[in-house]
Image (cartoon, rainbow, N blue to C red; front, side):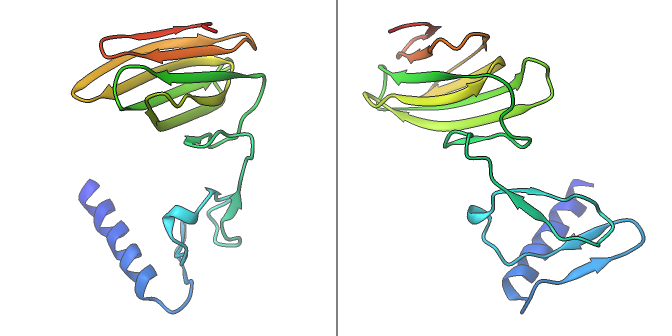
Length: 165
């Protein structure tokens, strides 16, 4: 199954690079549209139906922080979340979470340089994080349920999360 999916993806990528114009192939149940747009320039793509009658609708939610993806958008109350790196030159931070009601997800992946804090706008909800700095990796969880500023402090040997100034 994975091999077939990978081969289909590679064929679509080759046809996209070589094909003269967008094409639509339709059978009884699904629709595939080949788009000549680089992946780096695509926003969130939503396919309203798979009947082949309408093309992809590209949407953009300006409330989502840089480095984050919220497929269904940001809904409900949000709060600032600051990440500070005190330990190494660079820390790779991955944060995944769901809103309080569980209907909306957000995925964030960023490189935080030492001495340059990064502030995200996150929905109230539950989050898990994975922080890689050098050869050390730390993971944990936290929740946001107030509009006060929460902070993640990254050190060489530990991660602290709290309402630090």
